Each structure stands twice: as C-alpha cells, then as structure tokens.
Image 1 (cartoon, rainbow, N blue to C red):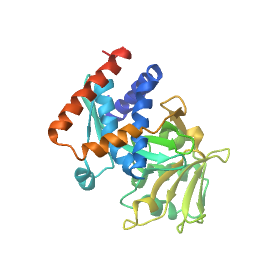
Image 2: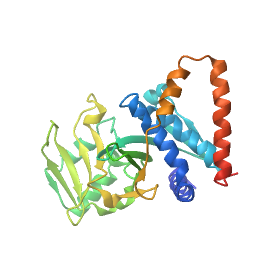
Image 3: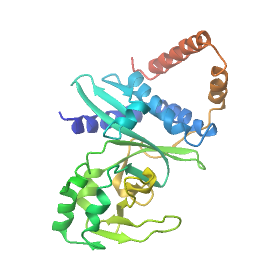
Length: 281
C-alpha cells in the first residue's frame, strides 16, 4: 500500500468512525471553531493540534503528529500533520484547511508553475488531448496527490462539515479550461476548469512566487463544486460555542505547570469516559 492508498483508507476509516460516533467529532469541531471567539485565525492553528490528538485517542490503528510551524516553513510540501497506519507501517502527510463555506485553497503552488503552464495555451482550452497534456505536465504533477482534509464551517448557521475534494473525479471530468478576468475585489485573472455540463470544478489563480499565498495556487469552491466533494461527516453537523473552554484557556494562561497537570489529568479521564461510552475500548 502506497501513501495515497493509505490516505484513502484513512479517510474511509475516519468516515466510519464518525458515522458510528458523530458526537466525538461534533465535540472536537465545536471546540475548534469556538477558538474564533479568541481570534479569526486561531481555530486553524489549534485544529492542527486537535485533529492529531483526535486520531491518537479515537483511531486505534493510527498515530498522528503535528508537523509544527518551523518545519512547515522549511519543508518542500504543505502538510500540517503526519499520520502513520500502525498496522501497515505506512506514513503519509495531510494538509489541514479550516475554511468558511466558499472558496477553498487546495494548494499554494508555491513555485508558481501552474498558471504559466496554462498561459501558453491561450484563453480557452477544449481539446481533450491538450487538457490531458496539461494535467500530465510537471506543473500539475501533484494534481490528485494533494492530501487535504478541509474543516469547513458556516459561522452564521453554526454548522460544520469535513468535505474531502475528489481529485480523481475532478481530473477525469475536466472538459474546458477558460481564462477569466477578475471579479469583485480580485485583481488578477484565473483559469477556471469546467465539466461537460458547464459545472465549475476548480481554478488556478494568478500570483507569482513572491505573491501572498492567497493570491495564487489551486482553488475550488465548496458551494459551487458540490459534485466534487465527499462529506466525511455525512453532511452538515451543528456545533456550538464553548464559552467554558475560552474561560479555561484564559485561566490556564495564568496558571502554573502544576495546575496544568492537574487539569490535564481531569481531561484525560473525560476522554477515557467518552471512549467507554462509545465502546471504543
């Protein structure tokens, strides 16, 4: 089993776990998105330590570690966590994305190769052989190999979803690629990919290697490309803000290591209780 097969197996196993015990992920995601009360980007950073712990606690054939910010800046790829299938001894890396329901970045294209690769073919590409040539180019060599776990939320409705993009289906469905001028506040053009019915699949944004990561790369849209997403959570699930958690963080910042250890011991007992109640032991 290669790392991509291991990733797909992990997604299947995670889906099954959530199907049987939806309260586990609901609790975790509620706590993660509560962090938006503290800061608009705090939830994304804490998701990177929450999801590995979720895997370690509730998925017994897997272990996971947070890659860490310093390593993130120096590494070649974009992963945030590493996961090991302990039975098969296969390791793979995943990029976590905590985004609102809408535009979703799949890859930063940090070397700025995708847009120039498309640009040489003009403003409209409909020839199937050319499309396949583009997708086979080194610039798109990882299209379909990105291992992204998107945690999607709708803050107004207090709902969340884990939506996994189906790269294989997307790649097979591309029938037309269009160069389009910017809309709204965007200053740079994009190449949008469409299927045979004119349905939106994804897009490549312009922005050279010096641009902000949000100005370039491979993007899709959770509302406009629903046919190309699979929900691990079985659809949207309700979540609620946990004000006690915010209070816990504020008090923890004033406490000593001794206090932290006592609190940690209590939290571990609570997690074990959840395992027993979910018949995970």
